[in-house]
Structures are given as C-alpha cells and as structure tokens.
Length: 61
Image (tube, rainbow, N blue to C red):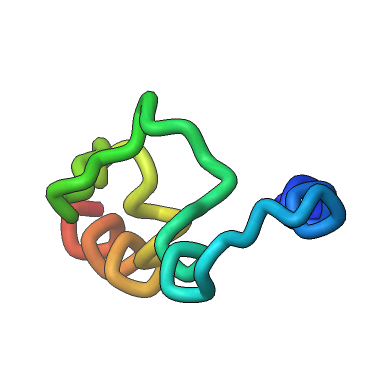
C-alpha cells in the first residue's frame, strides 16, 4: 500500500490524509462488517478455556 501511495505522490496524484486513514489493504470477501463473529466454540473450547474444560471433564468423569 505504501508503494502505491509513494508512486502516486511521485506522479503528483495527491491523496488527502483523511482518505489515507480510511483505506485498508484488504478485500471485503470473508470480512464480516457487522462486527459479529461466529465460530464453533465447542470445537475450540479446550484451547480457549482450558481450565473450564478440565473442570467439566473431571465433573463428568
């Protein structure tokens, strides 16, 4: 992204600073713009919450 901005500056194509703060080097595919993340917590529970997973295993045990 910086290389493109540098190239534009070299060509005297000015990009206003307020626009630079609004652009990102990402595509929109697969990005949830609503701010809601959904993933299978059950699949990753042991890695995310190891102490709680161990407690459940010993209680069921």
